[in-house]
Image 1 (spheres, each protein chain N blue to C red):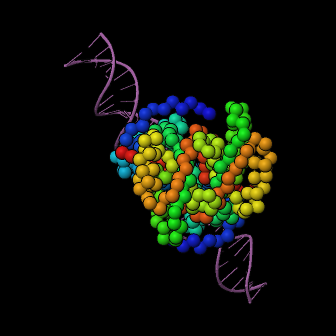
Image 2 (cartoon, rainbow over the protein chains, first blue to last red):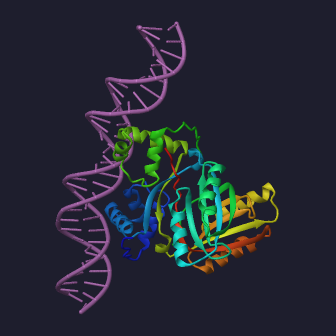
Image 3 (cartoon, each protein chain N blue to C red):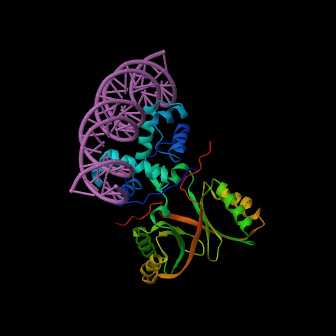
Length: 160
Length: 160
DNA sequence: GTCGTTTTGCAATTTTGTTTCGTTGGAGCC
DNA sequence: GGCTCCAACGAAACAAAATTGCAAAACGAC
């Protein structure tokens, strides 16, 4: 972890972020016009927010079906022992699996919720054997197969 | 919507995509060196894949906590009637809510799984009133609050 | 009001993206 | 084989965007 020495974000920053999280290929000059700043000013703000960790990454979003990775699966995992050590172990194990796109540690009837993308059911089966059946701290897991990815994004709504 | 006339992706394309989905600010020249192509060749491939819809978007990933949107919530929704019309209605309703980042139509004990990000619990409560209690086709919903976003991404594993 | 700090805009520079164009390599055909 | 056609390539020229340096304006503290 680096050092997130956050300066507060003002209205300019919010507008810039709103644009970038929709399309980060937008030229700084265009952003500048949209928010009422010069291109260098925009650039400095982007740099600052990147260093502060407000902007975590700049990525291309791909279509899974175009890559033969057409199955999306949700899994609720319930563990047996919830000691700090065991939880950390589970977290790092889940984080390390490339098929696992998202992993959350949650309250409620489950302990972890995973979002998994695989080419075929056989791959998911192999994954369950490795991650769940091969882990004796996993009490139970429930699988949900996505029939339709109605909406997929990481965009954060920005009011103002 | 244009026409996604997909050409098959070769090994070069895969390598390029792998780089772009990790960091799409990587210069084309650098990508070219990494994959063994010239910058224009890389540029043409990126353009083609964008037109074909393989590359869906280019976005900045923001840190929700830096924006005061610190609560991530999962919801499993079960509906009463599963006619095509009702399902479509639910889909468009969920897709329209900005707080809902992801929505999947799934098989299993639930019908929909939602990933929601809100500033505070009060906002989620308001949302439940609007979306679930205000919709008489919703039979039941289960809420999971994320204590830790262990891993969050949309990166698709690319073998080869 | 004055000083010091911060942030800005402009202009010059550097880097990156894009287009042009001539060449190469392969598929299909005579 | 020899031929054309087509698709993709790379080198170089070109256009656009990002980045840097610097002086001026805006903001705060005193």
